Image: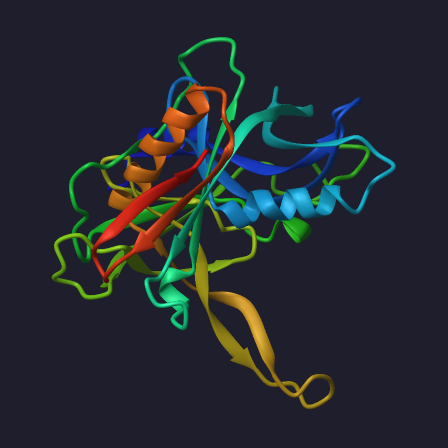
Length: 280
């Protein structure tokens, strides 16, 4: 039987990530998902979610825009946005030892910090032990933000918009590069994800993060009338495992606590040997 208390708690830790007007703090758009991983305001997401926000800010040079997190509150009849700007952020990039190889190693992680008034935010913990194959998992996300989280000037309860994250259930189906490796770098799921799912936590039954929704295995499409082929941004979700996430968070937190931003490069000397180098 599903534990609704745990599921509601999980939802309370997940935020949408996007951009807002820096003066009025009106929402402009959403890019993806993130989750709190500490009581004092650290957020885990995919770096390309943050990078997408920065790229879109560059398109509006005549406006003061900021990368923010969105949390939607309701008193039963009225909806309002709780918008909090990101204070600092760290880019984490996983690189293969061989530059000609891409694919599974081409992963990115984002660690960000928001200013909070208290150190009691609901948050998810990153699991320290290795995850299990075929265990039940949940992904909590804001999928397809351009369609499901379109911002209107007037918020109401009749627009059909989704103002809270959704839950998807499935299992861990494989580890990368191979199931029996002691320290796998990647995790494969049987959950189908779309744009906006990036940065979502992959959570175990005991409410711990076992992975990060990073990319999807795209499906090939064929359309006789328009383009002959292309990639549909929908498919099975995969991403880095909790061991990678934990190392990245520890290193990124150390930098951010010193008031620094920048990047962390994870260089792989083999399929299971990773070394973190900090550009600070």
